[in-house]
Image (cartoon, rainbow, N blue to C red):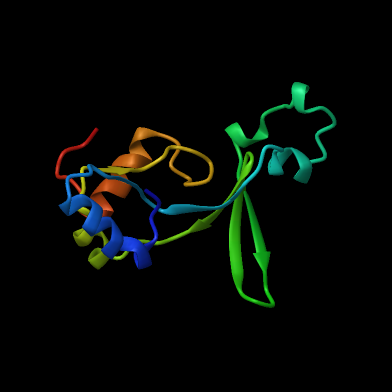
Length: 127
């Protein structure tokens, strides 16, 4: 499931009725397409010969008039959420919390992953 705090009560209902949920922390997809947003953004000429920039970079798109910030990674546009302690406490009862290692989350190695886990108070052990 996506990390959308407004949906947590619905997630609880599913969880309480036996559906084991995994929650992706930090990001929720806003738009997913068959054509790669990143390739279009960087004017890649041929999808078949794409240089795969999304493996190393993500792009922040700001819309100042309405105050929206979105991230582009591959063929997905994401909204980033910063979980509070209250959010984490609600999520601990779910089966699994997923922290993706990618340029979009800015978690690119185990050191950074351990720091995120420690800062959020998820688990005492390190990976």
